[in-house]
Image (cartoon, rainbow, N blue to C red; front, side):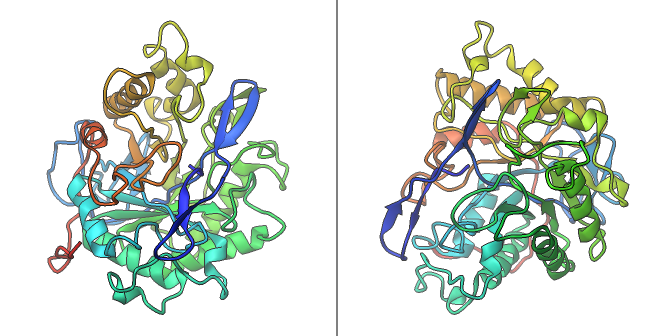
Length: 417
């Protein structure tokens, strides 16, 4: 998701007209931004699509087995998480830290039942001149004087101490917006790869940092499986995955789709039919998780929402574009982004969200919900605009399907608001 507000300092908030991703069959539109990373972890496992099974702690790095994510002993692990954006924007830190203490925010995520955090970033975050802002240092004294990468360290440390798994998401090349391809004039492919290699090495010893969402919402010029080194997203994903595994073999590699296949288009990052003929193949063969994005009519009123059979037509739509990978036992699927403002009642958007959550649960698929932040213009967030109160409709929605947390450290504690 891309359409959100952001502060220029720790006090005022300023609207920015960021483009949002959307598309219709046969036509392009605007876009959504945020992604996810996944990998190895010690977490509570789920042995069926029913997330109420809380038997045992996962052992060893995560890997894949057919359509499942499993631990070192073969127990199924389901990721049911949330996105918290901001580090990819000009604040160079997650949003809301002008209002809340970091640890209290993460504690509330865990209390709300999320077991995974998808954390977006931009490559600009790592530049020496990228100064974090939009932070109340009285509420967050531990962040004062830190650069963006060091703040990422603190977020990762807090999340994993609270028992959450973390997926890192390369969401943008810079603070100004998403890119169609993984490489731009400002961020070369070699820079993209070296940044991933740095992060994989940096978090290698934290077993709850489970992987990498390689590039958020490939689209437009992005192709799949055609062998063009400038545009073939499948080829680039293999290169990045193998680069990451050269320093950290434990990480899962989360690969989004592009936006079109054989002249038919869907959501940015949401088209994975090409993976049937051209699957992503890594040297570490059991580390690939496909991670599409899917949105509702609040983002763009696609024709499938207006079909007379809605919502009964939606499972076949999801099966066609990405769900088949899990249902055919080819590879795990983690829906990296979905969300909407209306989650309760009988509106098309609310019905769509509940239908999608039911589909994910029935098929044992993982997800990270978009998003925790209330300042996503297209979807709103799990939190209300006060950055403190959990929206009851969103709470009821995500509670339909949640897997347990990893084991939290005893000293994680609860921080003051």
